[in-house]
Length: 212
Image 1 (cartoon, rainbow, N blue to C red):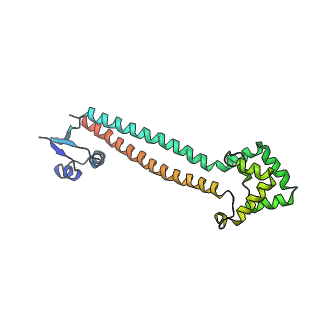
Image 2: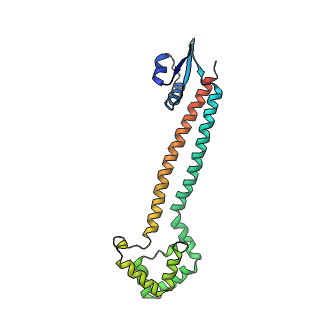
């Protein structure tokens, strides 16, 4: 008569002579994730009455679909991380195609006061191709009154008291995005790995369930 098992130790204690390590490992994982089996001994063989092959195939398909979802999420987050990591490199290349950058260079090497202001605030001119930064950089380069007000604000604001860098917010956002991406990718990678182990275990249970 077949016995029902939800606990690995109960199975081992019931069939002490069963020593197929591969199947025992698969069974242990299967039961640990909430699986149920019904098994009986026929001679020296242990036969699974439940789950049947169709049931196992359905479980495998469900896990594969979930794994595909995680893999797509992983790919999306990997792109986000790569985008954050190459943010500076991309902008350093794109700046050469922007006229504002060349106007900045001309003023930097010909206007002593302008050069001093640029160095003072550490103007993030390498971000001139970024639409979020371009208006400010363009005004800094072209409008002396705006530049003077920005320098004064920068020197007197408590926001920049500890970190004299105008683009520190951009750096913080980049670091934040990379840190978040790393955490999410690590979590997704573990989920994908665990699902693959579950699928491998179910494949072994499937082969076992076909033996009658």
